[in-house]
Length: 465
Image 1: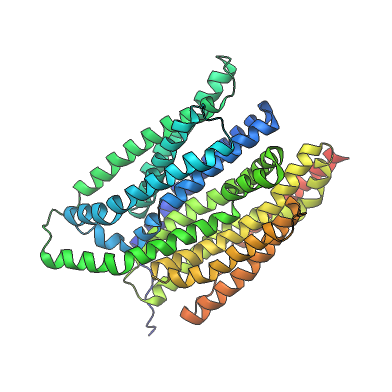
Image 2: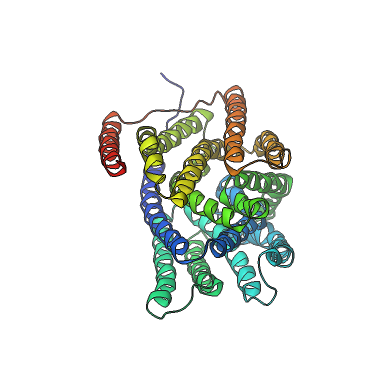
């Protein structure tokens, strides 16, 4: 008889249910967002669009740092702070709310008074809109992570999609119908309203969930257990997770767009933000569907045997491969026709070329994400961090060692960096837990993708003649 323990059927079904909801929601979200970004690029000057891209990237990079690793610790301690109402309140207040509040204020202040003046006039109303968005989005990100971890995927997706559609619609209604100018205020103020409403609705969901928890009192022993687990490990984990999150975003448009604006100018930053946005859309679809549902699954298996966790890791790998395989096959077949088609217009050629290179970097991030989830749940994020510090050093070398580097050469070097670091992480995980990725997908699924890719190849080749 086998000694391995399989994943509980109920947990697997909740993962699949959450995966389907987050996948459908993220696809709808990213399609609308990509269309919105394309419209902004079409109706704004390239320099103005570069400012918009730099501001969005700077705001979200600050929110990821201001989170201070809080979101990533949720899966590790989900079973601890959801035991009862009082355990939830005690843990949430003492180890999330109170420590994070001054850090959020600090990061918001540094971004507002040091970095925003590099892109804006000090008289701009963005100096109060941007800080408000940073604070609200930091809270929103944490609450989103929490609600997905407790499998409230459907409610989160419905709320965020509804508010997102209203947010985008309000901008283009004012532009096309009311005749307003596409100013920074028109673009960012509706975002502030969207963030505020979302935080309020997430708070309602959280309160309703806490009310349904058992109302047992906390004993001195329970408090000691929470305090011991939190003080001895949580802060160290959060520091590691904060650095890990920042290291992960070194390879996204959130950091690279401001760097491109600084090194190559606002116009180049605008081109890069547009191109990276399409690649980031695919990344977001996979990160939200596999990432949030995967964190919830691994968190629910915290006390399970290693064999069960490895089975869950394989399930996550397979779900990710099923999402990555179709666009990979499509690009392999249609790469040259797409490039030839783009050469008709200089802007399109630059955009497509940067998108394809950045997409390769994005693909490498997907598998880093699954390994990172496993390391965090196993409370081994410090080891993962040591490996990721190699990335930080190599990225600094890429930007500073060669003053004559081009955007293409830097992005190509980033691909090499990611491959080296992934090989190190995969090797360490194998020797630590005998953890092996599962690269399996459905044959009929791939045949349909192949047929669609060949059809697109015929259509694109006909157009480009």
